[in-house]
Amino acid sequence: MKRKRKIAMLGGAILLSTGILTPLIDSPVVSADASVISKPSISGFISHDELTRTLNQIEKTSKGNIVVDVAGYSNHGREIYKATVGSGDKVVLIQSEIHGNEKVGTKALLNILKEIGNKNSPEMRQLREELTIVAMPMVNPDATELNRRGNEMTWDEVVEQFPQLDGVAPSWNYYKYTNQYWDYASNPGFDVNRDFNPDLDYVPQPEDFPNSSSDPGWFITPESQTIRDVYKDLQNEFDKVDVFVDLHHQGEYVIDGTDDPVTFSLSGVFVPDPSTPEGEKYREYADDYDVDFSKQLNIAAYDALQQMGNSPFGNISLYPQDLDLPGTALGAFALNGSGSVLFEITGQTQSYGQKKLGQLTKAVERGLHGILNSVATDEVYDLDVEDYDDIPLTDR
Ligand SMILES: [Zn+2]
Image (cartoon, rainbow, N blue to C red):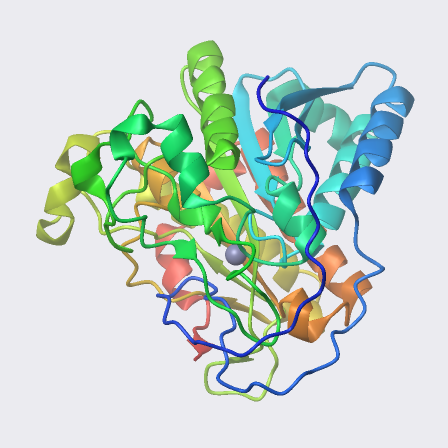
């Protein structure tokens, strides 16, 4: 598709912190503490090579139910895959690991694919008949391999691709800091999940840099471009992408008013409603935006977890709701009419490692099944939107 294949790996340098502030949505861990810490093991997670092998295997054993394609390439030439299962006219796009240190979603997504592609229970058959599920596990593989948030790309490479940006200040989400976990100073990169724009045909303009968190992004990274292109192809084929789910991780929190540790947080609200005064700047998207449907999808995930009874699986909370993040995939796709769901699983890998890996993976699978089943059966449309506000808040 593009680009030479050049794999440059970071040599584990641990340098002094400079410290930056980055706005909310699982903000990166930035510390002024210059002490060297030992990183927890992440060997239980999936590398890009393992992803390639696993997807090939899943495709083979599915007997035609799952089709795996290369959707595009990362800046360093690694494949970004999409796996499609089902032939229904309701479209569900699920992605994981747009932040490379947020890895549980990839495991959960592969398990879900395997199950839906291989099993012949009435429930799985119904999912395949009613839905077209497009899974994009590990959409930022260069970051995955570095176990870090940002991709691996310099501003010079952006300008090479978009010469009209010569001489402008780099985008605000360009990382060049160093802390005890990461060395972006010698190996810079972008927060890909701020590089989306609700205008899916947007072309970078010099006056739109450096922008800020509450402005749209630019599609300057090959990773966001690949996801955008998959989304647009689905729009062209099916008219709309009904559901978009993005799998992330956050820090460690408790449920508001309790000591119960959060298993994951959910959200369906990423921008102010375009039909309200606060959402005025998004007015052109008012007809497509459907926050009620996003809320129903979140309730479907929440209910599926509550049905597992009094266990850590029940500790699901709501993510902060007062966001204005049009540069996130969720913000941009929600404005394009997709019912949207954010999963924020507990603990990022650079500090939390792979604790509770099995349990967290199961919980995410259960939540995803709640969404898929409710859409396949149309039960989601009967859920009471008001129940969304009964999901407990996160103490943060
Ligand atoms: Zn994230």
